[in-house]
Image (cartoon, rainbow, N blue to C red):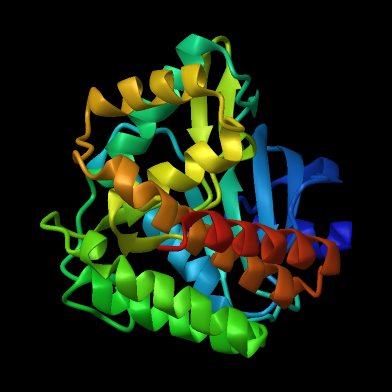
Length: 299
């Protein structure tokens, strides 16, 4: 828990005459600490977001928020300051504008708008596929299969899963590798586009937040993950979301064929995240889903 004094010192780097009138930690957030902060002189609502270790993550989110503001009309927080020095707060932090709103309710109009916002994010293109570190793609890959195989092997090795299961995953991906041969350019993937990161106020989407896991990749992977986490196989809501997406973006005729492969990769990413957090319940859940996926989809 951050002290009010340290928070005030950090905020005064941007707003020298300010005073904190209220500060409260957001309940959600598995990795980062985020605080809602009200200040006077000037009167503003802010978010102080504190990252546990890596300074590159705060630099990455600041870079992406500014890029999205420059390239699209998708609402995202304004970045007032970032600090990786650990001189005021003992961890890297970002000071952002607070976007008012509640998490996305699954109404037809808003689900469709959420699809459109995702397509607009995907309109941001990059020169290479890969992870986004600070403000760069690193490591860079010319092809989507090249990156996916690199990422896959990294996560399999890191999670220390049983060797037989790892072999099955690699075999399945190899059999279906032709589905990764895409012609589209690398685009910005949110990689965690679900209800709690889509804020709504007065019947409209007021903001998209949390780009910590973003990569440069294939748009359809982002779509698959959103469908998987948001709609629980509700075909009507999926169609509405995809209709909203198609207003500004394109989906290939191989989407349904790729969907199974991308779901498997999504479960593997979630397994890796659970391993990192030492969350056994979440790890076991995703391990189970991977095994189910392989037994259902194996060819």
